[in-house]
Length: 171
Image (cartoon, rainbow, N blue to C red):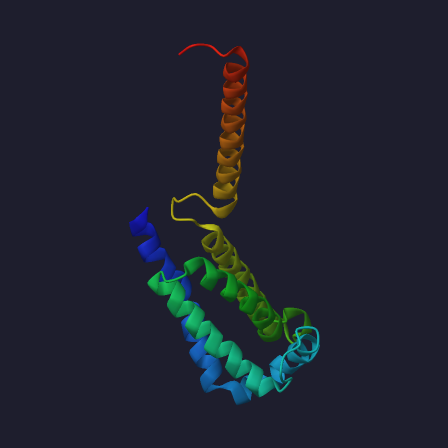
């Protein structure tokens, strides 16, 4: 399975690295399309600015960084979660097919929208992939069980010691 991850992660990361560089390079052109989304998200997310151009650049830089982390296998679960969070507003801003003026434009944006849904599915899968190691919930449950067993064993040993002391059995 390691070979699959070694191939799949860079492939999944490629659109984000490419798209992030595109956002950095073309932020001025993309900012007007992003403005409706950035205006709605800036206040609830307590972003330091609501300038669409700055937010497009920040989104692009975060996509490049997350994509590189995912592609290289460094913190892939964190990178996948980050990219998932970035993909949603990017898709809403860039592929609002419901606002398209022509059928051709609507179809093009719908294809991109659905493609991004597929990427989101891949990111969610990568975010929960533990590479064959037990996840945190499993490990926490095992630790809880071990503590319970240790406490139970200690209680039994104390009862046996008390019983031996009462009976004053010769050893």
